Length: 368
Ligand code: G6P
Image (cartoon, rainbow, N blue to C red; front, side, top):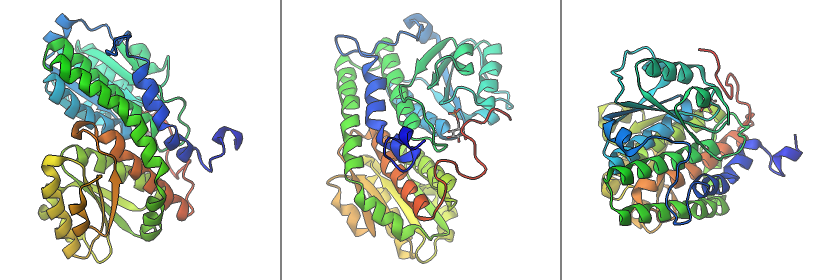
């Protein structure tokens, strides 16, 4: 086992380190000689795509949080309404699905029972099924009409890291492919976004290479009872994934809130020293996030901000700041998640937790 960890202490940190490569593989394997996206396994024609008036993205756990980012991307680029749903909710709620519906299932393993059941339910109602999965030949891939394989490579740690970032890349690519086919973005915008997507892998590497400060922050918060994650827009999706990562491997109670909801309840939970990880990567929402940070800080929170390089103003409202390299707002998710993963990893190891095999959890939940 030590050998397969490639010199790392745990599979989780090895897999965090494999992300730049996973991102590159997922993208580059589907770019043609002109640098355009070519999705061989997705047979949806332009005419079929034009008939789709509703997209559901259905998944569990981390894959569900990737799906929330997918909603932002598809709605923004391809202008199709998207609803992201938890598979165990979707399968029992009699969602409106017909032959003009596209169901995108996201599943690292391709074997999650609820996700598979949701797929079958939608299929029986006539939906077109597109699977995003990491495992070739998995149940989900066999049931789907179209398949997009993430090129993360085998993921061993229970807490998903590289599968998530490659799911994000896949969803961005699908969104851009749909958009260019539907004519909802210009060729120039399409080219620019592909090239920016291509830059994310080096930026993720940069975050990993400069993560010593994140380990120091982990030391400061490792004995906390609770931790809260705040974000707005796309950052709220990342707040949810960040909170999941922390709770599943460190057993610290971690919860995410949309920052705008603070005054409707969550602010009552802030005590002296409560860590509040505040994600502020979205330019239009930046000022709003800074004022939310000030609000929790005034109530004693220990504010750890995550912002884009250069946004120094955040330092006035935070105790610690983690900077990520400059990135287009819509693609920031691929970068933002990485410090959150690294923070959770260090908190968990410092608490002596079994990071690769957290208690009570399984890598793949194949029963309901
Ligand atoms: C389990 C794993 C998670 C994963 C979820 C969905 O809960 O511990 O890491 O995100 O299942 O798994 P899937 O294979 O469908 O992506």
